[in-house]
Length: 238
Image (cartoon, rainbow, N blue to C red):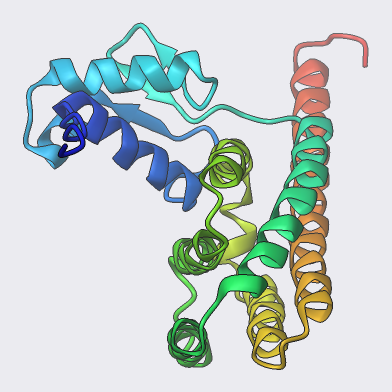
């Protein structure tokens, strides 16, 4: 007997998946406002399926849905970011371990060539969009591990931590080091050295987290200073 065909995705589901992917790949930073009419024009659809997709993402905490026909990429506290970081390190280390057991020479060579092409872009000073390429390559590596459940959990974490990481993954000073670690992961897999690949992954994520915390500290200090200036201008006690 032929197995039943998989149900076809609705337009709203397609839009939901597309926006969710964009969130995971750092397309928008925290605080960015997504307007229904703009998204509807981008996807070439009416407002209704976009509204349904945003509502679903809002229920998952990936977006903050607003009443003025838009949604916002939510802020995340340093504590919550660090909690997600700790979780993702454990999950992604497991994903590397599983991928190392199943990856073929052809699959690995394809990933290495992609990483080398990205390196050429970086050396040419083109780091814009690096987060998308970095996350896409890592996710393709993790898929080789064959665990859909593990991927689902990693994706859930990425939806929440990727947008605030946008600034780190767009800055050349951070991108150069992060990509060096990514290439180390692939070279370790070429040597069949899963433990070194896992260590390089942890190094990449740790470096990104330190950069993120640095930027969050700077942003917090800037906000505190602005608040003090406003209170001083209004004659309020500090």
